[in-house]
Length: 84
Length: 323
Image 1: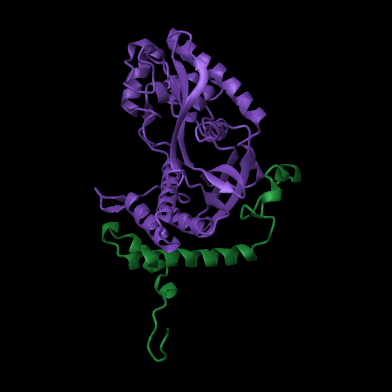
Image 2 (image 1 turned 90 degrees about the vertical axis):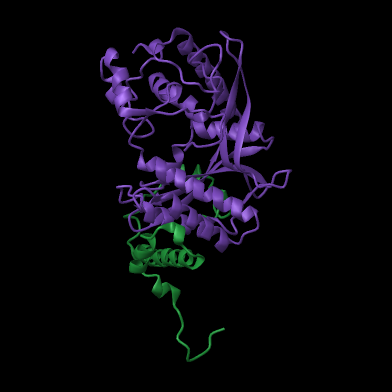
């Protein structure tokens, strides 16, 4: 529950790239659960940026296309089941 | 090369009767011999390996280790976040150089400490929790992860009378709907497209894994599901591919394997592991580490090996430490 008027911590903002580099330069023996959590959040934030950039990239240029024949050999009928 | 002058390192997977004859054979050993008997002799029988460890090998091992620990944590009742935190903590420690008090420096812009952690967090977020590919729970209640197997190869060596054993380690046995598969995680800096998956059919490792699932774990395994991760500098892409094996394909692979076992025996009997000089430029997709050895005169090779390589025991009967 968030109480209004009290400054809130924003893990994503805190775990920026500078913060991540600093965290990862430390001896991992001294990490707390919070430190690991901040690293995970920073890496997830990187994914959000990456996915946004991927969505904007022109399709068909950066990603190789499979021939229809080979695509079918990867059991397309189960593609949804596989989480593709 | 005068092979007989070099002592054979003690190795429980080899025949006590005929030095150089491997009786318990894993997919790595069989694949090495198929590729080049001389490469097999140097890397498996003698156990030589380059002093310069491949970043691709290290990265792959670390990714497998992360996946394995995640599965164990989940099976022990941990939540996804708890299991992920354990994996991140473990990988951070494994990639920390205690002696130098600094992180592992891979020297590779695609495969390094940051991209390893990034890849595993993204991968486990995508395929870790609520995955339609469920880890099988064994009869003893334990999850079917990190499985060692061994079973009869249905082949008897003529020179010693010993029976060949197929052995190795599977990462996991999983169920997709009502079908069983061996999941495997592969990392690559290259595009993950249909060409990537098609290279696994035929494939020595995947055929043996499928057979192992059927025979050693008495499960009607259909094939291997590959979780492929493309590791780029700024991001990682994932793709899942199903590599199936029919019974006829498995039978053919087994027939061929018996032929290879016969050739392996012949090499041990004659003390000669021939060089396949057509494979020097592409062993597992890259130039062979032993080109610098094989390109020298036979008398100079042992000295070069001792100077430029290190020796370890490749024993697939021991607990895992493979790729």
